[in-house]
Image (cartoon, rainbow, N blue to C red; front, side, top):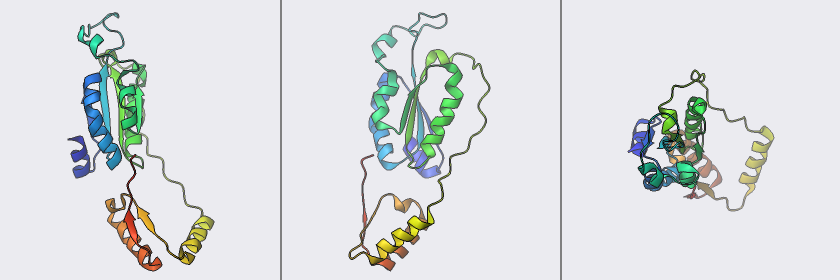
Length: 192
């Protein structure tokens, strides 16, 4: 559902799933989102106190659902970035960072496991100030000139693209370049 929402709306979805079981069930969808470069922020609960600390008892099922390293370790191969929160003070900045990384190129899912003890706690700090995404640096003009020279003198240039169709403007530029070089264009596929 989150992938469809992101693709249809262009907005960043946030998803909350159950701890270990939810994380394991989500891995197929997360891997698909990673391959398709669909941004989303996924949060999973967990327990770090197992009812030993004052406060709510998570119940005996948490012992069976716990895993060494928490849910963040279970999904790290299926997402761009995975983090197991270890302090409630870090929650706002961690979610902000997860959002930034999800929408930064190449886009993809990010994952944060949040202990339920932190979700029930009062945040000790104010939310972090809004942060903008880092901008890509400008290309080196000499490198562009050298690349243009290599391409225009190549005997049989071939253009391999990936995900270029996401931007109509990029397609127009690709067609122009391919026609200028007389180069065939093939769609590549990266497993992530």
